[in-house]
Image: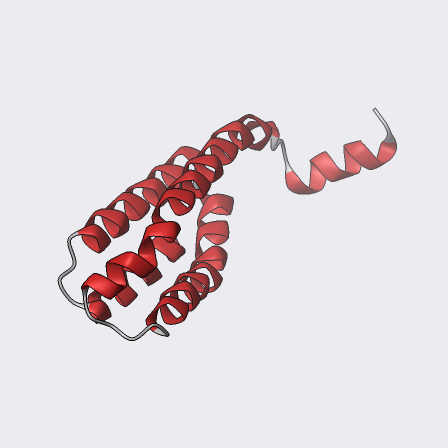
Length: 121
């Protein structure tokens, strides 16, 4: 081992468990990407059925991006302190809840809130 590797291990400890958890994180990102690829094309038709203005599609997309912006730091701090399985499971459950609630929401503002929740997952 190089001297730099030894110094890094002394300073930060053994973090080999994080390399194993990257597979779980990649699977979660793949599942989230597929869920967005299925849901987003149906968003305009769903909002038209709720008699909303066409600009509401943009608001829903920006709410999802804002949710990602807000939750990314929280999930990364959580991942640094706890096992990856907890973080990935929580993100998938949060995404499932947001998607199911979005599908059954009766009002356009509820759709906006649930798109924020889906984005935060």
